[in-house]
Structure formats: structure tokens, C-alpha cells
Image 1 (cartoon, rainbow, N blue to C red):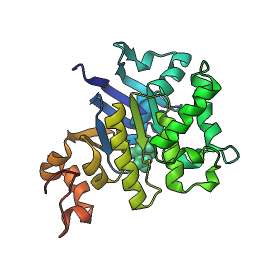
Image 2 (spheres, rainbow, N blue to C red; image 1 turned 60 degrees about the horizontal axis):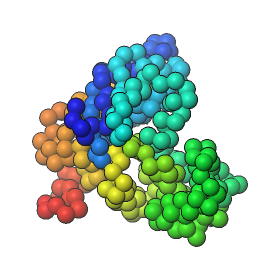
Image 3 (spheres, protein in one colour; image 1 turned 90 degrees about the vertical axis):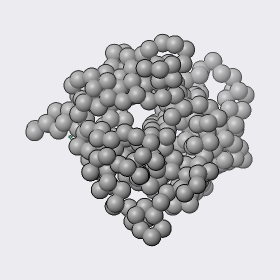
Length: 280
Ligand SMILES: Nc1ncnc2c1ncn2[C@@H]1O[C@H](COP(=O)(O)OP(=O)(O)OP(=O)(O)O)[C@@H](O)[C@H]1O
């Protein structure tokens, strides 16, 4: 482990205790660095969401973490054993240290409350000592940060586009300045241009605030663009973990090559991927 390590996942196993049992995550070990964007890719059902949930102890029965552990290396120096946290500590941990943007999260906004008061609720619950004026100022600033704009504080969800609602969810996830954001297919429901804008913004925000991101998607080309490293999952295991350039140019695992070849945009005449500021 280096000083820069944020999360150490050590040989974790997750089983859904159904008949027959489903061994969804198998012996996954991983170190996530501070400020790193780690892409997690793999076909449907390979265990990506189960792993993301296990990291935050969000799993519900019949899921059981049957082996291994997860340690969060807090920026104040503490090592937090996530598997050992009690209920209250876990609740604080989840918003304060780690936040999550779920698939289709934009549809989770309350339709009868304006955006401002939904953002304020995060502070009311987790920062009860804050004054009303402070809360309001923070909410306005958050909407500026995600480029929705403070003039939308009083808007209701139905008055916003899908992309804007998803940005509001990202603002909520950012509210308490977490050290890790886990994003599970956060932009899948949006059109491609809006997806790109939002991803660009996530990348800028992590440079500005220094949080790490675990970004889950089926969309490997997208991960090639935005990730610092990419983990490829297959049948519960991480079969390859490398930089986008190495994955693109020299994937070691047959399965990774198969995944890459399933995206014609990467392999056709216009093949090649281009990251901002990089020559092809
Ligand atoms: N509640 C459950 N009970 C039994 N098996 C489950 C349950 N939830 C998930 N699984 C199984 O665990 C395995 C991993 O599922 P998981 O949702 O983590 O995969 P995923 O890679 O995130 O898939 P997707 O990309 O479709 O979201 C799959 O075989 C799935 O069928």
C-alpha cells in the first residue's frame, strides 16, 4: 500500500445464498488510489454491481460477504475496516466518505419537492449544525458546480431534462465532499452528447476536489476515454487490470479482446481511441 491508496479490497467473495447459491464475486483484490478513476467493465451479470455494493456494505440478504475484507484509508489517517462497521458508523461512512450515483438515479428524485429542498435534506440529515443560510448557499453552489445553475433551486424534477436531473444527483453525491464516488451506469439513459458532457465534468470535478471514482459500465469505449485504469470482470473475477492504453493496444486476456471487438467503433476503419490531449 502507498500513502496514496484510498481503498484496499482484499480477496473478497460474495455469495447469494439462494438454491443453488450464486457465487457473484470471487476472490477480488484491488487497490484504488486517491484521485483515480477506475473503470469497471464486463458483461451483464458478471458481478460489477455486487462488488460495488459490497464496498459500501449495501448488500442485503440473500447476499453474504463470505470471505475477504475492505479497508478504507481515510484522509485523516484512520484505516476503516468496512466489514466491521456498526449500523450508525456505516450510515455516516456512506455519505461522508463514499457516495453512490445509481443507474437511473435521476428518476429517484421526489417529484413533489423542488430541487433545492431535496439538496438541503442531505445537509439537514448529515450536517445538522449548519445554519439555514449556510445550507442554502451550499446548495446554490452545488448547482453551479454541476452546471445546472442556482436559478434552478426552486425547479421541480419534471421541469428539468434527464441530463439536468442526473447532474442534480451528482450534486447530491458531491454534497458532503466524499473521498470516493461510485457510479453505476450513471449516464446510460442519456443521449450520447449529454453523456460525454457529464463525463467530462466528472473528470474535471475529480481534479478539482481530488475524490476517486469507480465507474461501472458496459461501455468499454467510454472507459477507455475517461479511466486511469480499467478492471475487466468476468464471472465474478477481475481477469485484467491495466491502463486504457495497455488494454486497448495489448489486452492480455482473451475475454478483454472479445469485449473490445464487440465495439465496431474501436476496431473499424475509424478505429483507435483518442483521449483529450493525446495524439493518436
Ligand atoms: N438478489 C439476488 N439473488 C440471487 N442472485 C443474484 C441477486 N442479485 C444478483 N444476483 C446474481 O449475481 C450475479 C452478479 O450480478 P450483478 O448484478 O452484480 O452483475 P452486473 O455485472 O452488475 O450486471 P449488470 O451489468 O446487468 O448490472 C448475477 O449472476 C446475478 O444473477
